[in-house]
Amino acid sequence: PVPIRRDEIFRLISEKGAIKVTELSEQLGVTNMTIRRDLESLEKEGIIERTHGGAIAANRRVQEPLFYQKMRYHNTEKDAIAKVVTSLIEDNDTIFLNSGTTTLRIFTRILAKNVKLVTNNAYFPTLTLPDHIEVISTGGVFRKESFTYIGDGALQSISRVYATKSFLGVDGFDVEFGITTPVQPEAQINRTMIEHTQGPVYIVADSSKLAKVSHFFVAPVHVVYALITDVGITKEQKTAFEEAGIKVIIG
Image: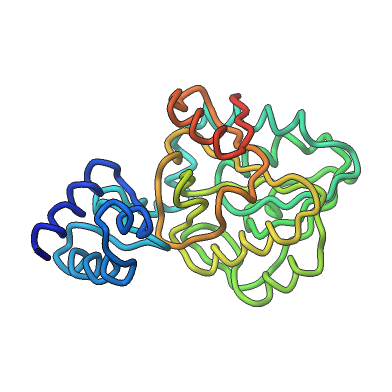
């Protein structure tokens, strides 16, 4: 019966935190279409939220703090991540760095390198820069909440570049649900950076971002070469990412 199946769906989502439509379909022996209708009904009740290809428990959704609020948190972890990134950047690299406070920490550490940085982070150009480093700001529509540039102008700037490496901060990174972000235009920015990276794509995320899901899908986990995170990652999380083919580097 439908009520019993929906109770079971809610139980599975509550237990796992997040689950795919295909997984629910296999476990419950019904079609994907039936599962989607069930999820739509449960979402209307306010007890789950649908995501790209699945659903999460309502209390698992990542909300977006303001840029200056994020600057206050997890700074030790962000510095550890930035130190690792510095060792991975070589002279003459062309690098994508997206918006966020983790990438800001990275930026301040790599100023000694002879590199070209392409970024939609509106905070970078406000800093004093040495002559040998070239920073290309995408421009575009300024979004004050995240201190970033979005929109067609930013996307066009990114599309004209092919980077050797990218280091992307994220709001959520999950083995099943991939890279996610709270804002649709920023999801498009991040996706375009990934598509225009010739070399490795690195996710730079403190452990509070792991196994979390935000509103908008950016890309699946298989596009990521490595995750750079801190010692707060659990053994289970590390194993799950490695089994998905992602190198895990702990700062």
